[in-house]
Image (cartoon, rainbow, N blue to C red):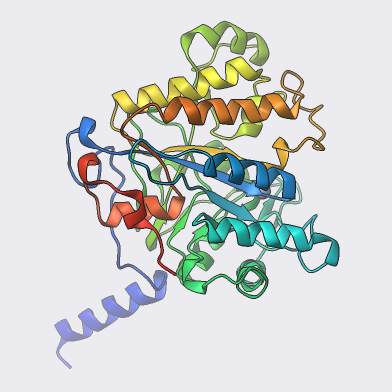
Length: 378
Ligand SMILES: [Zn+2]
């Protein structure tokens, strides 16, 4: 064998052995929209992504509300649910039959059901040097498989529609990405992104070169985990919200320090106590979401993501931990009033994470955008 050929074979073999198995899609981290359109011509997509979904009432509330509204063009609002089936509410128990039914309802309405593992385990628990526990690839594989199995066999999903994944507690490790890429999930949405801020964020990207935002991040540094190469696996970041200037003094007082007004993009982080949260009340929360949307619309129009937990919005949820928004009716109002605010704009659409990834592959400008073109067909 000629030495060049030998070298080529060795190179190919080493590429195969180091990487995950996929790689059809490729996109680098970039603030430029995938179609290269002028910023103002890009459809502004908003993804409500709700985790856990352990309350029938919580899910019915948001499903009913979204069904009662439509976009300016008459199309339906859609969102993503990242649930678990064998955690606090075991879907196999007769008393949780209604929880399975409400997931079927969501699926039949065209919403996305994504995988958040069966048992909501910590994939990484504790910091390095403190008796840290990291679960193995095999264990991750099992709890991902178990939940997908339940989506197919209890909810009746087409396995091809299970394409989105979020790591419990956002406690990701490289092994998580390895497993879900090998299982051909389209995307993960576990990595928080707060560089640059709304209007200048990077768009979703494939993790062929890891995820640069994780390098030197608090999570990476304190948990001894870094991100390798996962060709073709999309990352839909969990983008931080930006508070308006009028809230800075309040937030300084809560944090006991000056800060830049960025809030990790989930309801929990707006409402819980420091260090993870900001104790916002209803009006402050709404102001944060509206300001974030404004910056997106005036900027590069990367998707806006809002992480939720639908169970927080049920009347029987104990909201005492959210000191300044302890009533469920106020928490519901934040989401409802924000949705109604956003729907005033001609070029804003509420879509699933899967629709965003589908759009990344087939971008069009806002005049030609129809979210239904990016749905799965059953
Ligand atoms: Zn969760």
